[in-house]
Amino acid sequence: MKPKFTITKKYINMGQRCEPKKCPVALTFRNNGYPDASVGASHVSLTSTLFIKLPEKVIRFRRAFDQGHLVGPITFELDI
Image (cartoon, rainbow, N blue to C red; front, side, top):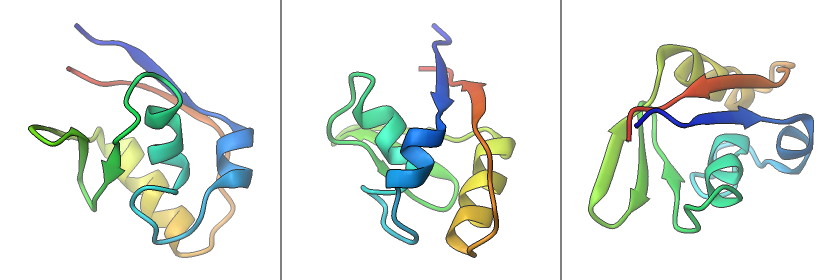
């Protein structure tokens, strides 16, 4: 199953830099059925036993956001 996720402007504005559970990527997952999501450098932990590699464009987005660069909304699929 490959659901689509969108990191919206709302999640970007609410997000906190360098916070695995409060960054825009984590907020996207947390508000789409994964309330325990935590984002690392290249993977997301959706539950205590489910770790998934993030798509490259999400890794670049997270890195840019954490470094203080201006980012815009993106949509991506994740193989869950």
